[in-house]
Length: 313
Image 1 (cartoon, rainbow, N blue to C red):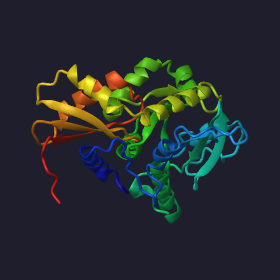
Image 2 (tube, rainbow, N blue to C red):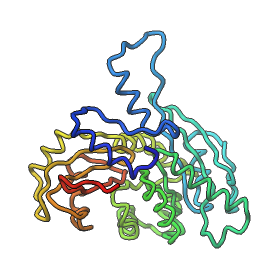
Image 3 (spheres, rainbow, N blue to C red):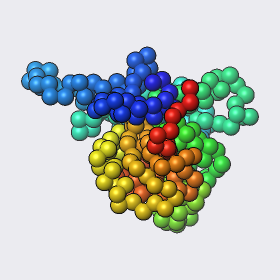
């Protein structure tokens, strides 16, 4: 199961009466955590060998010089990453682990992502490739913006990398102390502008902070954990079927829904006819799923399949 496109195929095995189905890729390590949790469920806990703390991998991404390295330093409490007003200081990813309440937060400060036309140097081109790789490997992505510079088209492009990769994400508005002092801008007004510009990120929470002074940085730790739990949440088929019973959906009849995967949560919707749901109906269904089950901070995927239809190939 090396690609997410094949994960919907696992639903076919339920028709064979198999209760527990786990899509995995041994080569890439995909799905192994869920499988191991299942097969070791009920094992006695050894007093001398406690289970290791959970680990959440967090990638810090954004345009050059928006304060990613400063944010990393604020999160770990020391100056590990080079901080400079010169854009492009960080060329390689910097990893640091912070332990909070039994959780290991592994932060990766990636190089600033530039537009392709501006990445003339080979080192910068490679840094962009590596940054996108770290996005794919991360559990949570922090999209850092510069409050003083406001919205730039590249911000949406960078956030789109995480969204398209199915990564859970948090929008971090850095240098808020400078904007608040100079322009007197209010958080709710700024957030409304974010929602207007980033319509595809309506699920992403927004955090206002100052990495330089440390104001608001501590709020990230519980929020990262909350978003991670949402991205890894599994809803039983029974709960989803009870949800369908109370769902008002006139476009077509929905027989049942099952969750196929996590990170991002993917739901297979079995209906009385094809093809895929219209965009507006799919969006309505996503909103209803969020309203009922949460999933803050993570994209969700809805795949439609007509009941009784056979897959080609």
